[in-house]
Image: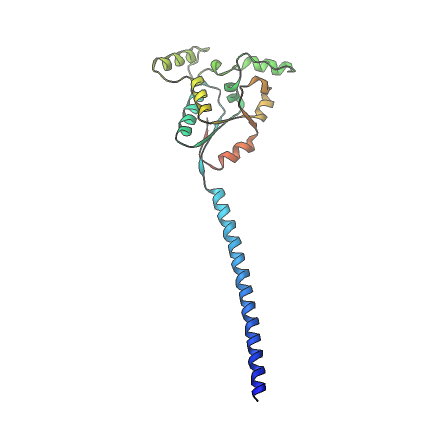
Length: 206
């Protein structure tokens, strides 16, 4: 009788130990699954949370609008935001070197180059330009008031670490070569800008 009771007790202990192992394994599996889901949710949340960035698109080639873009960009960078400017289409005129020419261009590309501003100093105003008189008057009034010029703001932007990128698709469309643009630029397509803009607290189109 005692022997039977001992066997039953041993069997019960073995079964209990096996059950405990099964429960522990199941708990471990569920906890691991929950941890993976939580980590995935946190990663998605991080990707959706804006970072301390400002992303600007400069589409315009007008002096007053480009001035506004650089005032905002330098202000954002000075306040601690990681700032980038993406220059596309007419905005590429801001980045041109004065008098720069690239070889191997076709007739249309050369004509288009002659019809567009060759550098920041050649930009006109969006209104009341009057064949360049408006831009000259605006620059003169800014100087009288001690306001930084566009060229000075561009220098400040570089010193503050503002990332400036030229749109490669726009360069191809408008026949602009890298040799015609100022040094220190990045070159990328719209996907690069979208990567910056998707994580930015501030996104502006100028």
